[in-house]
Image (cartoon, one colour):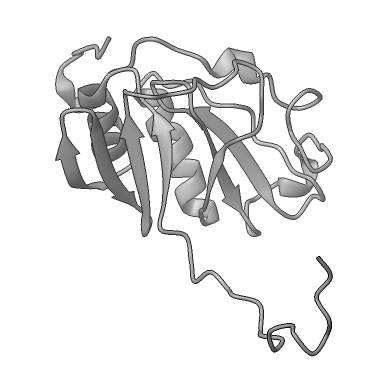
Length: 174
């Protein structure tokens, strides 16, 4: 059936989405995931159910669940979640993650102005910290194109099974 222009609905503006509501990740252990996102990344637990939790980190709701999940590939850069961070907090977060026993990637840059770093949550979901400018020595960091994986970052090296909060007296989480 052909629709004539006289029968067609009037042209309307394209619908638009407003903003991101949440991002959801698979989670191997909900208690561990909740601890990671609240105690390591400083988030606030908003929803706590037997198979799902939602934690707000930097005004982003991150859902973690353990039913109906697809697990991340050990060497894939995509998908990943990225947070903007300033230079001072990038250095402090890098130190904090290392103190927690969480492997972090080397710092790297695309153009010599920004500074980027990857790490994973305990379930292997990839997280990026992105400092737009102001990190001392950014122009001397290893460079990569749009993606850091491969030439600059070994994503396989970011996997781990145990981590510890420094003030937890050496308690290991898995």
